[in-house]
Length: 282
Image (cartoon, rainbow, N blue to C red; front, side, top):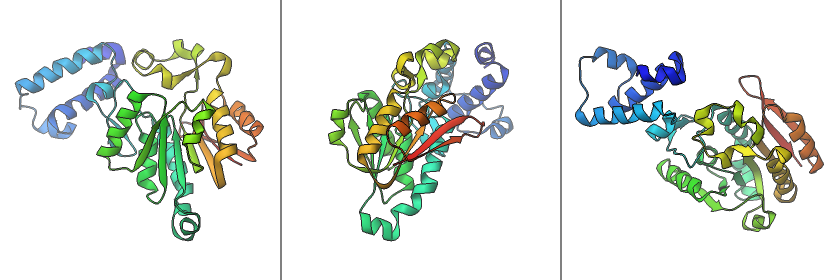
C-alpha cells in the first residue's frame, strides 16, 4: 500500500497496511511472509481496492475495517462514535483499580449493588469495560446521540456486557431524574475548544463526530460543570468522579470541581506525561 505513505508517512502507512493485510488474510506479518506466494481471492482483491481507496481519501482505518481494540477487546466502530484512545484505557484502569474491592464482599452486601454511570458513552468502551470488570455493579451509560447508542448496544451485546443505556442530554439537568444515585461517575466528555480544530489531524476532524470532540471556545468546561453538579447531588457516600480532561486544562477543571463542592481533586498524568485524568470526591 505505497499509496498510503503520501497521506500518513512511511511508518504510519506501513502500520495501517499491516493491519489491513491481517484483516484480509487472517494472518500476522510473519505468517504472511512465510506464505507470500499465496494469492488473494477475487473477493479479497475487491476489498483490498476498496479499503485502499477509502484510506487514501482519509477515512480512518478503524472505520474502514469497522473495528478498534480497547482493553484487549475488539469494538465495532463507525463514524457515529469516536475511535477509542489509549489514554481512555488508562482512565478505565484507574477506576477498576480503585473500585474493584468496593463492589465485593461485605461492602456490596451492606450497600446493595453500587451503580456506575458513564456519561457520553460513544462506542460504549468505558461502560463495557467497567461492566466486565465490576460484575457486581449496576452499570448505566448515557449519550445524546441515538446513533452512538446503537453502536454501543451492539458492542455490549457482542462482548456480553450488562449495561443499561439511556438516550439523554446530560447538560439538561432535568434529565437527571431518569438516572440513579451512583457510586462512580465516569466520563470522557467533549473537551476540545473549537478554536483548536485547525491544529488537529484532518482524518480526525473530517471523520470523527464533532459532537463528541468539541466544546464552545467561550465555555470549554461546560461538561465538567455539569458532571460536578451531578456528583454533588447524586454521588453516594464514598463515591467519586473520574473524567478524562484536556491536557492544558487540569487546573481549570480542578477549579470548577472545587466550586461545585469537591473536597479533593487529583489530576493524574497519562503514560505520555500529560495531565489527562481527574478524580474528585465529595
